[in-house]
Length: 114
Length: 114
DNA sequence: GGAATAGTTAGGCGTATGGCTAAGCATGTG
DNA sequence: CACATGCTTAGCCATACGCCTAACTATTCC
Image (cartoon, rainbow over all chains, first blue to last red; front, top):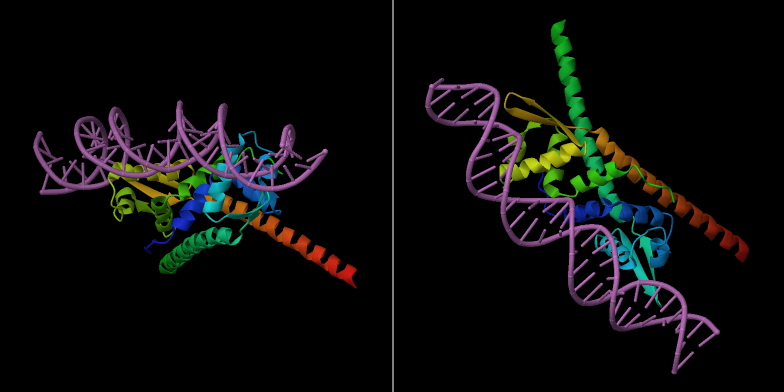
């Protein structure tokens, strides 16, 4: 089994996305940048609680932010989703390769039955 | 923004995958079934701690298990990864649609400059 | 300058998470 | 039957998480 030393990034991305609030923020930002309070509006949550979610998203690289005046604007950093994509693709590959092997085993069995 | 009521499943799948131990188990199982102790062997962890990870994976539907005699065998349940795949694809779609819109805005700006 | 606005910092609180040991149960095996 | 094997249950502990309120800072606007 391949060693996984540098996958802390994946850890934190997956952890960040495992919270529904944070996932909704990501979904919102996939449509374009937004400020802290715009992002917070749909949620029934105290602002400090909400900004913690934003900090989690930013720490793991899913979003970036920039403060102009007193307004902080967040944007999605889509390359971070690609990492997840890559991992998923790798698993799919393992899985399908395994199914291929099973197929050939079944084929061999059939051959033998003739 | 679309409402997200039934996404507890995604919550728990993402949470499960956010742990490196559990991710490695999934990677292992993507190559074929294995028993509890086979799965545990590579990890320097007390068995009860490890089986908790297996339970987490099973509760969220990422794996299934079956006990024959005193041996429990685990297999990957790949449809659960598809759910994640679907979500990721949706985000990618939002993101690229957004980029398309930006493209057309830029195009319009250019037109006006003529 | 004074008041509203936008975020931030500090600190507290209950629950969930991830690890452990010790003991318990089945199920195979000599 | 006795013993080894494979896993499970019970209970403990420390840390992390997600939420809150209160108070603070920094900007913008009249």
